[in-house]
View 1 (tube, rainbow, N blue to C red):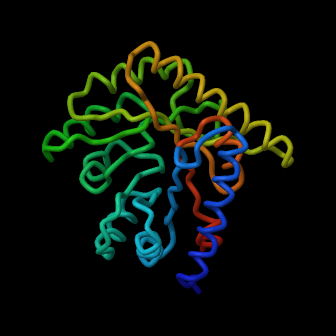
View 2: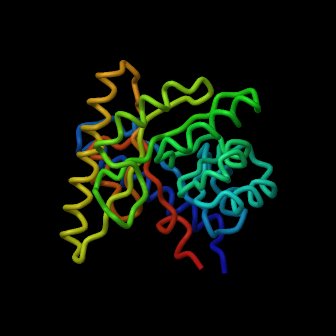
Length: 235
């Protein structure tokens, strides 16, 4: 049975308090870090809860699931794709998402740019980098990030706003935490270097989830993606 709104609100209040605490501990303004609730596999009511609570956006992993869910939700939310995107679904994703965080290869750029042009509006994107060198994760290799960024910036209808990454898991909690620290620091360094080289702000750093958001915030995350801690275990 899906949770009720009061349960969601209590969890969101607690999570945002912990995020603010982590930001202050890192010497940052809590307002610099936003929460992106991840509604994948949960019913459309999850997105309604997010809007009712007052957050502006939700994250989804699969294009078709989000398209069906969005049709059921009347609230004016922004929808962000955080899952792997196949090239043959790029046009559909451009049509139904306000931002795509998982642009991880040059092959995706042309169909996204073309679709955005046909829609007559720029498409916001984040470039996904495998900053933890995890063979189980999607994302451009760090060495390929400059070329991917240059190719994305050359597209007339794409607006590159920053980067996204997912930290590898370890075999122990301590190892997982160390992987997360290294991954997030690596992406921050990549962003800082490429922002300086290109003169493009690249302000968004989407990194951190339910188990590692405090480490991500310490490293400079501006957007934390959380599903389980808000909505419970996925079915």
